Image (tube, rainbow, N blue to C red; front, side):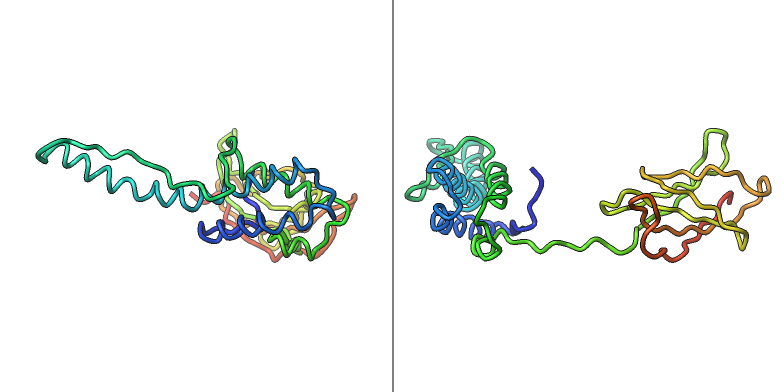
Length: 232
């Protein structure tokens, strides 16, 4: 499952987040109509994930030093060889091993939890799962590059980002000439295969984009962006 924006990036913060969720979720069980199994599984996954990310990972990270020392002693030392064995840190009280995928299951549980009747922003903040919606950009973003077409001629490749919109409208012109419009363009990248106005003579083309939604262009145009086509 993909990374969740509410989940911290630093390991220490992840442990704190998981323990906060573990300790506070039971208070909302009745309000959110959680079954005993749902509550128990979610709390068990949170506790086990906190143990793996925290104490277990720390212990595993320290073991290579002991292994290196044991290897050196076994190969070059004297007396009895005693190779170290990694002993995981003891489980905290109430924490039990869980099947693989504990964090993914927890993220899935949270996604379902947000749809429960009674769920509020205040609960989300308290559990650490509140995320502000990121507004979609007002304009598309696009990149230009030139590649060789099937016949060896130049093709302008327009890679665009429509941010959830249906499509884009592309407007282009060569030099100061008239504009040509391609619309609606749904799939990215779009390839402009038009031949050069004069064979083997480089030309400067300009492109700009706007969003397209519900059968018509919407929003403002991006600034014009230029690229030289046919340059050796």
